[in-house]
Length: 161
Image (cartoon, rainbow, N blue to C red):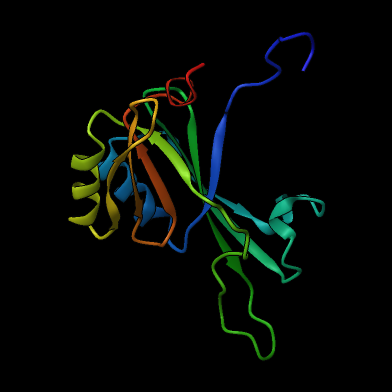
């Protein structure tokens, strides 16, 4: 960081999902995110060989990718990895094994949103808790097992900045 100057802002978080279209529908319906443009199908030949999408080493037939936006301006990229068949392989292995700890979302009512998630195929993990800063939070899983942290305040409010 240059003498207290902020060097970057969050742009988006990328999340691998087994079915891009179903994930777009769930995130827009359940969390009210807005899809930017349309879902794109990108054939493997258009993905650079140095791309992080090629980390697994298996042939990549294509990806389906969609970008969603929340009210705070940070995006969520949903990617379905479509692998070609190889001898001994299953016809498609949808995504590589990149780990994502969680995506934190600021919401007005963490408990209420957690109940909506649980009621639409996701899972609420534990109860709403409160940080020393007063920010409430609860953890959930979307229907594909991706971890979500629902928070009542911004990151700056959470850390008291």
